[in-house]
Length: 266
Length: 266
Image (cartoon, rainbow over the protein chains, first blue to last red):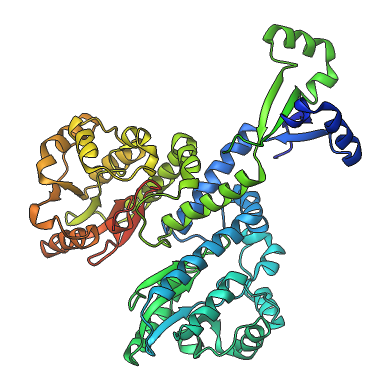
């Protein structure tokens, strides 16, 4: 669809300035580098593409600002937009900035043995991007069995900026509570995967018990945060890619929403 | 800065397909329309520009997801990004999508005489973009006196999608409470401005009393929402461009964060 009816532009590149001022040198460089002049074909986006890009950027923004109604799959037309976002530098840039803001906040917070930081696991500490890249980046409906098989391989890579933040928060003396929607049956593989990727010495890894299975993530995670508070911990920071990691009750003093345009968990 | 060292590209446009298949007709059309062939100069972004664009898109996203520490002015390097966002179609697209999501939610909510919807005023119902366009789109430090003079002119235009939502919410039978950080001294001009722009028949317009002046917006607005609840209203929807319109206590069942990369109110 993106290809049909596109305008093609034949582009001749020329260096302004240098080439005009020093034509001989520029020409020498050109022949040496075989770069200038060089014809390029640039595909200009169609109006239809541009309109879809605009709508999908708004859709992604609305999701991150928690303005969307619960959704089961991203809009069909947004698959290319989301793929470009995740596979290109923008996702990494967004993750890095959120981690930097969290880190600045953690450093400014008072050190106290009862200060705690809650981390979600999937799409927060570990990335399932290799799995989702094979499943339409969120366009395919979620397949529990296939996803479980991926989890059981224990090969989810660390999100680099989250690993840096995790280590910093630990070094600052925060208690680190890993609070995941993964089931207790996946405890072993989750521990192995986290360790292999450089996460060590967390204070507690909380997984979903059979009794939690029918709860929404918001309820399950709120309950667990309430238990932390009941044990005397003060939750100063909470990092998660879902609003259900962050909202509800017993909320953290500050929450950090990592980007995730692939799936929505209520 | 964006201009220096930029590569310039001389572009010859050619229509693929039509021109190749029907050269004579294409050539006729070209001479009639004086459109093809037409040399264009397209400025390609430098690597530096692209990196700043990436950082500023992340900064704007982080703000909308409430990940940023309180900020007094947007980052210097992001002024061009924010200007393009606000002056181009993306801001409008984001506003429209948030209003559509709010509208779908309002229609699905049960009709009840005690259901209420809270609207902020500035950058939610009315737009101060004409003012901010003259003041660096948020790059200039906020000037109370100058901004007050702008408010007193009563010429802030309606945000079109917000006007549509406002009318829809009223027609659905919601009580509409306009809760603004504007001071009571600006009541007259605010009422006139709202009416002139098509907003009518709100149930209450709440402005900041002298006693509220030193409160944060979060505290002031939470107190007012608590009063609504004490009067028996159930706040189902809340539309605002600041997180301080939406967070705190007595929060709405659902909140809608309109975009605003120009300023931050705690």
